[in-house]
Image (cartoon, rainbow, N blue to C red; front, side):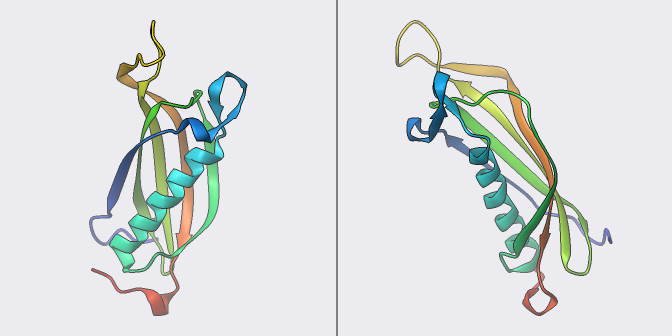
Length: 133
């Protein structure tokens, strides 16, 4: 893998909907965070290659803290290495706001944010689809 130029970074912030709750205690399935990482992978390959590419595999995934309906998650990713068709990426998701307090509408800004997940993945962009910026 080469390290020719500055690799792109991407981030997004979303509120986890109560419709995404899957388990007791208002817990959200880890697959919700993986969907965010997939969206970031798509954006990263668009920035680097001008094509969505295909998220091929996760090398590692760690779920480190619970995510509940109503939480705000900030996810970020970056390309860390580039091969002829592969793009190695790292991702993190942090909980930045959590719903808790004396009232149903209470929330609290987390300072510092809580790391809820991280992953390493590879996307592939076929040579014929690569249109570097």
